Image (cartoon, rainbow, N blue to C red; front, side, top):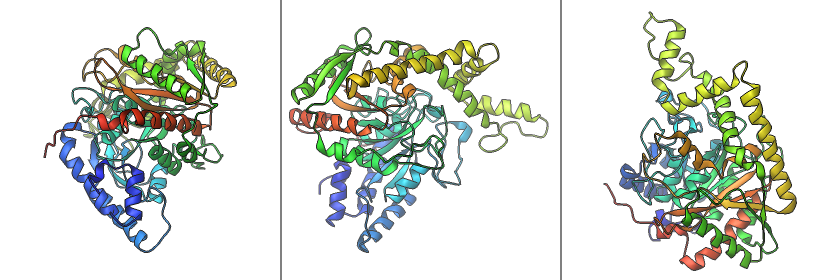
Length: 501
């Protein structure tokens, strides 16, 4: 069987179906891998060893009994620590929720369990998903398995790093401004942001309610599509959930054909400020898709240049409202409750101790943007820009089927390199933010290594609302073509991590 941790989810499923391996064996192999390398990677905040093995044993029992199981039943998964899982610590990367164990499962977790997917534990993230590097976690920085001195991206760096380090074949992230796609690009993995409303936000600890989107991560396009299918679909518990059938993402991933597809290269997402190696790999991928039969044209989306400032008014405004519930009165951390301090003082002391600098920065910015006298000038104007960006997408999709760009302007940067420069950090999201403002679907697929640093580059694909299948159609075709050049997926070129235990 070889090393079980190096197998794809599809390969692991085949091993279980044929009786060559059990879910318990596969789960234990990944738990052993976590024990061996996670001291260096720091992808996990909590490893649920007992719970994972119990879930795996239950799947094995059902398989032996001949019960019908889903295509990912028994396959292990890493879960971003922003989705509630009953009885398992859920912190959203913040000290203010340290030790909190939710009394219920999020809809995504319910669907994972219904599919028989084994949840290994909770992964590290920027506090309340505020960040582009996972350096804002209250529990320490996750390291990029390609280079342990570099960031894995954010906010879901823990999920992508876990996949890249072979600690899990599958992971769940959330994407508010690129928090699935950017870590995917930085770690050489696949990261998909589904259509907003295509996956349920029920049980997702909210950052910005009009932007947050749970989504799948894996090392191959087909694995990602299978996970997407497992978690997507209408949820009456989420008022923003779309009541439509899940797009045929698995079928599209298996088809891997772009012949006749119209692809638009976004003029505004490239040029000055983009790393030469990133642009080189991007243009090579576009040429490859052309050779595969796609029709490629340049498309202009003139209002994309305003996406970054608009986003950093809309997101903090919604965050300041969503995070108001962390008031030391209902759950989580409570500081100064000694009988002497007022409720207001206890709340102030708790928020001071429990929130990190980036969270405080965004709360203050958002509260100011929503305040009397400034609402129309800031938040209101940002929403108008959002409408213009949505129109840019609508106009573009009248000309082409999908849009493409680099996933990030650069490859993964050194830990600490931008920690003291929030503006430079925010610019990591230049390519990904427009999609979140519009609610469209998008994904990052590995497309090679940059010449300057030999680090992964992501190819960004954007599709219309509820046409998530187009992402997989392009991604799988590109993956297959590149695999012929590389002799396998990009992850095969990653350096081997030193085993710490």
